[in-house]
Length: 292
Length: 254
Image (cartoon, rainbow over all chains, first blue to last red; front, side, top):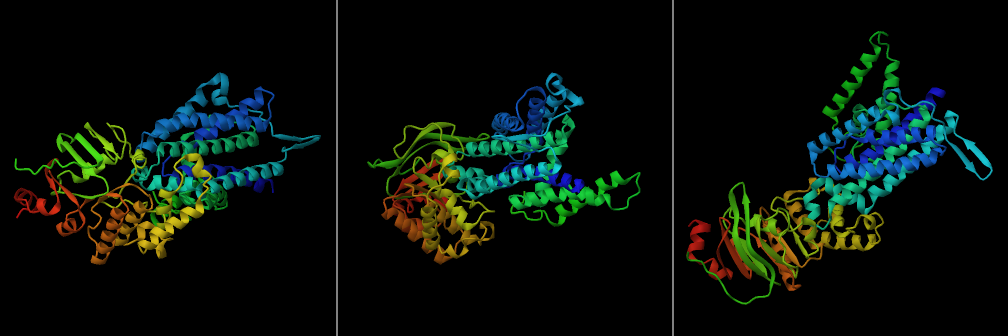
């Protein structure tokens, strides 16, 4: 049971990451490979604030979101000068930069040693204290955040704003002719998405009670990107499905009887093969409404 | 050079002053000055590569011009134009290579030009019903209402052209740049679009039309500019310009 709860929490966290990245990649057509940076900023904000100051989890989450949004604003400004493949490459560069900061700013992040001992959140309503120290209560908390972020994203993509995002993806110059300063739209969605990823980071840090840079390396951004390409670009349910598959797949492969000395490698191979086959025969992913 | 240059007094809605555009050393538009009269249908003709589309691209901020300046619809003197500003000047356009929002529905292709421009107001749109009504009106006019939920990418060539016209009609502009709106269309669609252009004129709108079909130019245009190699070869009313010997030689190659 604990095992299922663990998977449930990971699923909720990756749903947040997938849904938020889908806003940028699927709806707006900006191939961002830097989501793990904002995920990491949220995680480190919570880790550092909870272990070194007296402030609570939810305050640390809000501060993390503000920090991630501010940094993403600056990154978004630079990225707005790139298009298509170059956008992907430049965004990847930012992920590497943020990762090196996590790794090398040792006074703040303890570098590769990581930060242990991050506490679980408490909520205080008047005189009633509630602690999320059990995994089950933490599962409920992450699901609440995942649902909230899903609903906010749904509101965004169904609004006039969301329609303009899609038009930017289809033909940015053409939508400019109709009076839209697309820079503002691209920045707004990039910043919103980064804030959401930061929420996932805070939840992750407090759940695992330990953060180190390796969780926010470039491969993590690629992993999140894989979630939405697999589940379907420009479809929010696709991001949820993608997160479910990517969390469950390694677990399912665990039950396939590979010899124990090569099991880990074989899982990676099967995992890679499934992705290749999917891209060959179903490039839109399972529920995708847009193909890169 | 035996050009016909008019000095008639007009009320210009667009003035182009000594505008030049080079592409890697090739002069696409060469020191061009023209004035386009308000409330008229103005044709721009000329052989392929003469700079017609480039001129429209310059006037709609798709590409920057190198030198010169432009006045559009009462604006101050503009030395550069941003694409997202042209709707502020009351201008809109279609594209020679029909540019739709392909993986969006027909209805969304129209709604997206109707809704709020500002990011925050677009998130909390207040006039959904009004916009839907307007979109229905232009799509019905083009016979595309029945296709409103189809993706633009799945439309036929002719329907794509009509959708692009519907999109500019939805904008309520003063100046309409139409880049070869008739190319490759069936006669009944040609008729529909010519009627729409005439209607725009009746409503006091200004239409700038790039077109190769001389009979359509004769039928629709009040005034014609003939371009060749980025220069103005001739201008005037269609019947005199199209009868001009130089124009016939340069353009029709007869």
